[in-house]
Every structure is written in C-alpha cells, then in structure tokens.
Image 1: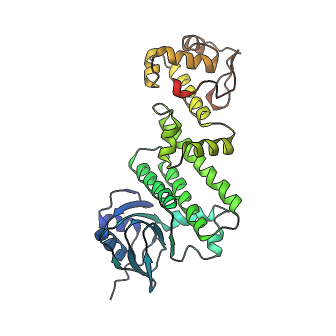
Image 2: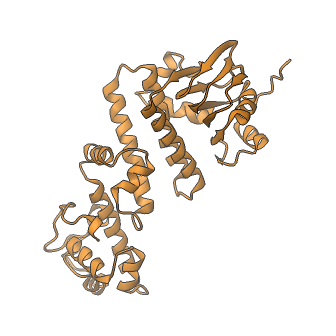
Image 3: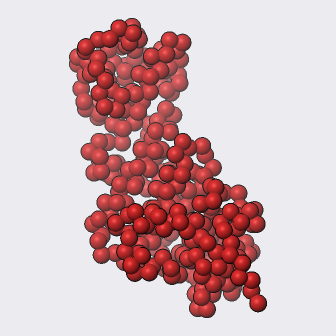
Length: 326
C-alpha cells in the first residue's frame, strides 16, 4: 500500500536533487521518460501545486483514481493533497515541471479580483488538463524558462519577480479554463508584463538598450512589448530605458572620483562623445557643466520625478534619439 507521507516542497526538492529552486516556494525541473515517472509517483499527497508542460511524447497518469492521457503539447496542473500515480509514457519524451508552494500560489489568486473566482468554482482543488497549440506551448515554456533564469540570477526583488511570472502562469491557465471577465483579465495580464519589463530594464539598462533583448527574455515579440508598455504607462520602452540611463548618469556624475570617460565606459556608450551628446540632450548641459554645478545649487536645476532635472532647453520627448544609435 502506498505511503500517505505528505511532502513539503523543500523536502521534495532535497530528496530529488532538484537544483533550480528558490527557497521553499518555487522549483522547476526538466524531465524525460525516466525522471517524469520518478517525480510523478512522488506527487502523491503533497503540499504544493505541480504544473507539468508536455512538449514532446505521450503519457498516462492517474489522478484521484481517474486515468488522464497526456498528449504532445499539453499542460497538466495537480493540486495539493491529490492522489497521483504514474501509469506509462512514451520513449521519446520531453517536459517541464513547475512546482509552487500552495500558500504562495493561493495568496496570489486571492489577491487578484480577476482570478478570485477560482476559489468559488473550486478550480484550485481539482486536476486541470488541457491540450495546447504550438504557440500556447511556447508561451508556457517561455514563462518557465524565465522563472528558471530568475531563480539562477541575482535579483534584488527575486521573490517579487517570481511572483509576477507565476501570476502570468496562473492567468494563462485560468484563460484556458474559460473566463467571463476577459477585459479585466487582459488588463491585469498587460500590467504584469509591464512590471516584468520594468524589473528587467532596471537590472540591464546599462548593458542592454535594445527592445529585442527584453522581448526575448519575456518570450514575446518586440512589437507586442512596445504596445503593452505604451498602453499601460503612456511611455515607451525607449523612454524608460533613457530615463534609467539618465538617472544613473546623474548619480555617477555626482561622484568626485569618477571621470566622464569612466562613466561613459561604465554605461556602455561607444565613446565619451556619445555620452556627452546623450546627456546634453536630456539635461541641456554637458556632463562637465553638470559636475561643476552639482555642488552649487542652481534654481534652473530642480529635481523632477524619475531622477531627471529641469533645465533650459530640456524637452520631455523621450523619443528624440533612439538608444540604438548610442
């Protein structure tokens, strides 16, 4: 008779040697036919959600006494305390597991008006399975890949970033189940894409000022990212990257031990002249003049929101100079 031992996510991760994990809340695993069978058998009565994306191959599992056949390009979500077992799978098999601690998962649902009906409809306590299109499979795989990258890289707000990504996963799953308030759901989805972009931009703007970099990291097209950022915030991708860059330039110019050439190098400009042109366009004065005026308060240089400064000749148009030309 199968043991009724109840596994916590940290116990499960430790027992199976899973290395892509963040604390006790999130973990991922790439599986083949052997590792899928091993992990699926252990999902019997656990205290976390398991989302399985089948990319290639076929399988059959048993959930609460009901056999479920998994086809290529499909997604399965099991819930805490469900009775699960492995039945079979094909030799050619590839999939991705995402494991999320129950409270972490449920709290995000409960705090989102557009997902909260999942409680009323008892959608979180049941097994969910759905076949996907290739595009949908790619979208889910992209979210899991970004979760893996976020776990593996240093982030000041790693838990929040993971929360955004898992929230996206939840909304995609909820949409597959069927959604009545499609408009509200769509806006929440866009807001989360915007939040993820801002987080990525704040970490990479020094080195990466191409929209394709951020779109690729989020597994969406650059056109879609550009439209979402503009729709949600009224600003542009280029505008945000310029604002981050200008704010960092001001901070570095205030450091007495930093030369203008060193700052240009640190901010990945092609040369000092390109940095000077960028800074003059944003502030109305050269980096050298800014350094000189920094220790002498000037009524023409009053801080604005976002770290920018008011100066004669300064325009608020973020689209004046494409960052790709810097």
